[in-house]
Length: 272
Ligand code: KIV
Image: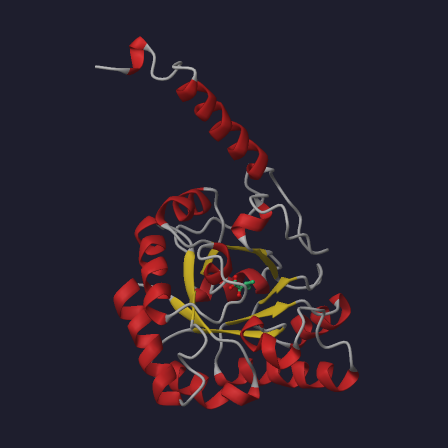
């Protein structure tokens, strides 16, 4: 049974702002392909993020840095073909927007045109303000991303909680207000203290979606494969596993393997 306050046929950036105004929490998950996105959309998730975490989850890279714009467009196109209700946001990958606003706009236009996505997401605050403004000016909705920004992993060296120091917290708060002021429709806050995240969410009208940012924000996002328990190794404190698909899938595959070896598959009924 749905606990949504209002039924939306199609989620838009305006719906998300309305949800925040109505104190309805926003649900967001990643997807990187048609089949999974279809399940996520049909389950009623509000926002699907084609995250650059595809670099880790789909390609097995250690960081999000190697994934290319072409690869993001490939993943996003499959997701868009599956989705009927959710808002689909696509990450601008590392190297596709940092050099200058024109490049950021060119990359965003490619994502919107070639995949059919509804919005883009970029990591960073004041450093990329001009790029965000340029994208917004072209009519492309932008989601900000502050706190832990995995594309800057080599600058920080670890994936630990961000903005624990006062000066970092202050910059984060200023960046969030700036992102709202220039026109971002929402902000992701990754791995920051819950109290700070709540303060940020209260200081802006646009929704703040948290991952490892506590319950005082306007919505939650998780990486789909992590919350489904497909990956046994990754166990951060903020992750709740809603299934153990790793075990379910391993057992099913082992069962099939055994049946093939034992000549139990296919049966008479399973052939022509
Ligand atoms: O790439 C991603 O999956 C993300 C989420 C963790 C917010 O940016």
